[in-house]
Length: 260
Image 1 (cartoon, rainbow, N blue to C red):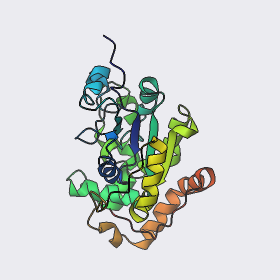
Image 2: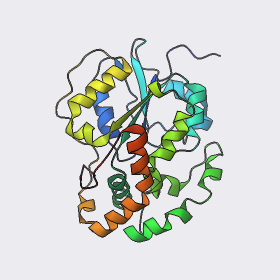
Image 3: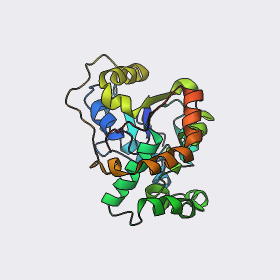
């Protein structure tokens, strides 16, 4: 049986993890023309693809016919098979990506995993172990319904290499389907970013909702990371900083300490 028209999302929030996607969700939920599933992070194109298109469509069954539906799942930007799956099912989707300073994002994910009891290694040991932990993740994730714990939870440096992740989407979607935003701008210039999102999604005007503070903020642990380690991380991620500036015109200063 064919799916009824309009029951799949028109836009996706792809990521990044620890980049402000929950804040974006809370903002968009307040726009009357937008419908988002009550539970953020559906993970259809990453973890639940084997459940099928009908399962995914059912997640949006409560949306009104004239509402713009969205799915905000920050794992989509990093999952190696999500871009192709999205392109096959939603070739006209509009894609929003929040990009945080790569070093700050890396540290934030590490401390987030520690708080959740998902990481028991010290910071430097975890970074040194990352490559081995992620070994064979691509082959494993090719299986429908497969998961890889370290790919989700211990991918600190890999998730901060934005140029590699964006390239996978740029091979399948046109430039005007992608909206790249700095996470720092979302927190510091929220009204400006809000207007860019409204324009991108072609939504009616609405003042930026007030009182929306950074969600899932950490406890500031990254402030205690030695500057020598920060500099080493920046060196490891130097190609990302360079490509993001040259190709996308996006720059950061690692001295910025946005919410964890």
